[in-house]
Image 1 (cartoon, one colour):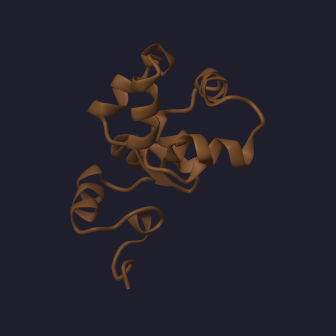
Image 2 (tube, rainbow, N blue to C red):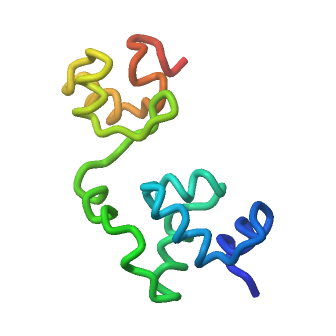
Length: 114
């Protein structure tokens, strides 16, 4: 029985899941970005990587564990990067994350959730 990841890749590509992941790793995508692209959870990608002994494919993945990245305007950025790029205080962004804001609403301000 194929996993969710294998099924998602089979719908999009004619290459094997291992080769697909190798191609994405070479293009510097993170596990989270690959999962978003395929419409599966990051855990599904991680599970497949561990099950098939492909741990070295995403060498920068350990860095992603320390600084959480958020998708804003099509990019994955840390709070510090969002703060610097869009001119919103780091602490304001942090509070908005804690209140449940995400994506574009992080940048908008009051009443962005409603």
